[in-house]
Length: 380
Ligand code: FES
Image 1 (tube, rainbow, N blue to C red):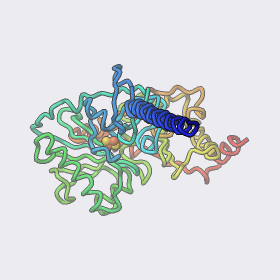
Image 2: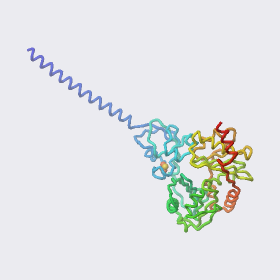
Image 3: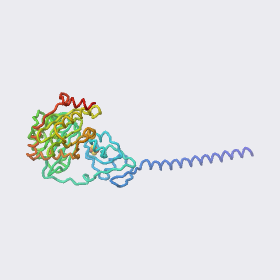
Image 4: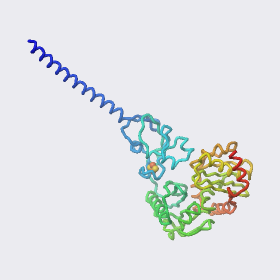
């Protein structure tokens, strides 16, 4: 009797444990599927609208909403620009965007992931717009150490593209530029350009032409340089750091003006109605210890005139604000590509650029007594 009761008790316990075990599994499945839902579905705001998505890459999500990714998200065109203050700047952002743009929340979308709760603003219009067919076109190009900007022009700039400058020689540089021009021609239904105008420095002008140039503005037959146009015009430049694009930044601007390009190569020029003084520093990291040298350079230029307006450009421009306290900064309005565009077919622009170039006096820094004195006082 006692033995039978014990067996019953064990049977009962077996059944209860079994039931408990099954219930546990059901609860776990339920919980897992709920948490799985929460993990995979994310809510964010796109152009003011709340969106729920299971996309992981921002590129996949924004493509659905009409965002263009001109280089297919390969990180080489720098054109998939969004505004999002909730994402930290990535290495790609820092390559293509200036510090001012980054501080304003500009980011590139193609290397980012979807993150819960972020808010994104972008303009979908270029993707939705049908490419128009052009009856003729010119091409404006700016070649810098980091990037190459190429604009296809009709009456004005129709579209511009930014490529990474990976060129290591004339053939390489021409094919990089030529390939991008041809892509634009195909898109806009033109066979080739009338004129290609190139604004660059001595280093890339010589690479492009495969011969030294005097920097006084060269008008050449484009087919001789394997470029898809009738005419190639290389804008005047000063030296390997002060290119035609830098001169364009001062053309048609109110003077006196201090123009500063805070890129990896620091270039500064004081443009007055009379003299123009320029200087440059290569491989600048904008670390605290380098700022004293830059301060001395800026003060040297500023010593030649009273209260010029200051135009600051370049990725590191924000770091120079502290050095220019008390001076009036011009609003950031980079119209360099537009000026290069006018140089395609306006002799007047070409002549004025050459006149600017011929008035430039290059200043030494380390060998200059005034600069040394300013550098010592900047360090104290
Ligand atoms: S799509 Fe070209 S860099 Fe993002």
